[in-house]
Amino acid sequence: MAAVTHQSVEPTSSGFERDARKIHSDKPVAPGNIAIGVVIGRTSEFFDFFVYGIASVLVFPKLFFPFADPLHGTLYSFLIFSLAFIARPIGSVIFMAIDRTYGRGVKLTIALFLLGGSTVSISFLGGYNELGTSAIGLLAAFRIGQGLALGGAWDGLASLLALNAPSKHRGWYAMIPQLGAPIGFMIASALFAYFVFSLSDADFLEWGWRYPFFCAFAVNVVALFARLRIVATPEFGALLERHELEATRVIDMLRAHGRDVVIGAFAPLASFALFHLMTVFPLGWVTLYSEQTPAAFLMVEFIGAIFCIAGIVVSGLVADRIGRRGQLAVCAVLIAIFSFIAPLLLSAGQTGRYTYVIVGFSLLGLSFGQAAGALASRFGQTYRYTGAAMTSDLSWLIGAGFAPFVALSLSSQFGIAFAGYYLLSGALCTLAALAFSRKLETLDS
Image (cartoon, rainbow, N blue to C red; front, side):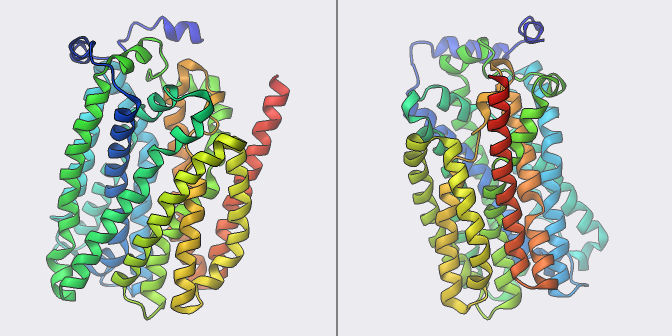
């Protein structure tokens, strides 16, 4: 099957990209420049992601669901939030076809303009009082557009960085793309906190919340140029020619590595479940059930994101000593322990919430820093790019897509402890997937 794929007559890149690589053939790109391009790209994606996530708590329940009480309005908002995660694998399939036909640059350009366009379009929406149910339908449509675009934004630059990494420092290089998540969250939370602090409630709901969505489009344009610069390098082209970053058909990849996709999707579940239980869910919980203002808690989370960055950096050092899978396993155990402590902290007043944020974000950094591609070695060279993309899509869908909705539903109905049980289930899934993967490798060897 692999031989047939290598014989494919479809181009691995467009003529424009191949010409660009010839122009830059005397300018080899340094790993540091690749790292900068990767971080900028991931920051833009997560900035869009968190702008929407924060608005799902502070804006959308009041603007699009004014007919519901605050709890159910937030739950409805979280349901629409999940649509992007459902659409993301579909976007990967669509944009993989565009990649094979027109090249990586065309794919990224369309995907990032779709992402930015969907995001900025939300900022122009009128609320339920102006448009009725059409406002909710349009919000859902633009959220689906974001999800499709995120599937197409998979660029292979993280793989390019890993393949250029020294063998003894794979963990260190693997953590670099993950820095985009806390950086994107810090920018989004700071913007929202500024407008909430500066404006009256009426002004913020009328026009202030729209500015972070405007900014998202500008950030995406900058990220697009940073990515295209790397895609046009000879190093990237060489990996395409060797099929190491080639977009293969999803059905072919699943036939060869379907089992590995499933295992890989469950392996980082603890980290991805914790991801939303530290960002979107606690903001919703604090807004609904505490006396603390959302803007004040956003700034606490901003500080927590700094600890997350530190945790991501430390994860690279630790992973190079004990291995990336060992790192994931240790973090899954720590997350399981934290799942029992987290509800107590979140409901223990302001000091407890601050402790929850600092400890939780630090643990998130340690686990999330190595969550991407820990099992990528099981994919053959031909299928690595497509396999990594689909595995990531499914991981986010299963582990994070419905996390805010499920955690808030359970905690509001049965008590905050059930949010911890939800997190515990993710940690157990990670440990089971890692154990099953190791058993398969023993059988295959």
